[in-house]
Length: 89
Image (cartoon, rainbow, N blue to C red; front, side):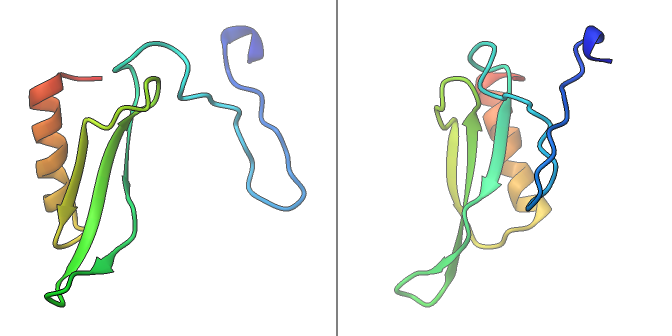
């Protein structure tokens, strides 16, 4: 399979398997990653869930949004807005 470009699977004794994929290779806007960065309370008592969308090559953040809830619908609105502005990765 390696002859056809499949990544080599590396085994670790103390953790999950690592496939060796490198999302930073390629060119800008080729691979994006989205991630919630945890949550924290605002001075008003409301909780904030930061969602980032980052470009794997340039490390730019096309989006960093403060959401009230870490749910699919809230995240989808942010992703859709980023794709509308920047196009498909």
